[in-house]
Length: 467
Ligand code: SF4
Image (cartoon, rainbow, N blue to C red):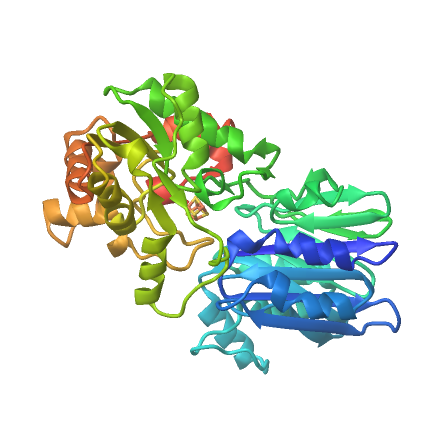
């Protein structure tokens, strides 16, 4: 996953680029970079990329920000390969950033190599996705034709920003799983994965890039749109977990969706409790909604200690990551002891951190009961469009099914139906594994209702396996 940002301005754009890119920090943990088209000299691009595992974007890129003056730039923060990519083509010098996951990148790379292309950014035997996309665009009859070529050929999903000497192209593939919003402030136009990047820069949303649409803009505004339209399938997980609470996608704000998820969880509650809370930070919005609907007080039995850690600090080993995760969440015994706690969580991926780092702390601090409420259905399928890190084996629901049925089961459809006996057995297995008093999930219908977009405009592959 990556967060991408681009800006074209009549005046210096460095403030917008630097802070706008920084507001993508929750979407990536590996690399951060910016590229600017210098105001003086045609086609001269300066770029800097840093690994952010041991530092934050704002510190690492501050020198680049201070040293440059430019009217146009793109930036990215990513959990994937380094970017922006800069390439020389017959369309001039291009700087490209992408987000998404191209699942047939190996075969596309082999095909291009067969045609004489060379790749320079190979990491662990894999092509850099943004370099692959840049090479495919370079083969087009023009830039929009090259982007169409990418959308014709890829499997998976990609949204991209391409800076040329004259302006910035912003494009989403024909399912538009990962949205891009265009914003404006007087003579400054910007584009961002996250609309939370706009508010404090004084930018307001002008439009969302549509499925398959290729938008071109410069400092004087939107110039052109091209592309073959597709069918919208915006990632529903953006609202539930991935996206920032202060953002909106396709005009639907994240935090109110999370509140509605919590309200829906509270409406079907069957237990009595003393307080409502959320796993910080991503369960907080859901918990506030739960408290609003149930009338229970919203309290914080666990608080996150973030000073000294920094949001994008990613230690190199799993052991150290686990240790830091264990240290970050601090229980408050005075709130927990003898209380029946409802704890809202955005989703359960593996469940190991929830069990070991959260629920265990509540029991140790004297909780009377711990009721886990999850703001989406059980995650059943790994993402093939945005997140590259999950395999089906690690998902808690799949571990439950394996334990109940043995390792070879392919058809999990009965486990998708919340009314089925098998669904109940699976949830009970996960509850037992988590060691909580009760466990309940939202249904897919309830989740989609909370998002308030038509179900067929959303990607819900994580939960139902549909395309
Ligand atoms: S599979 Fe899940 S995480 Fe991936 S795009 Fe679809 S809803 Fe989002």
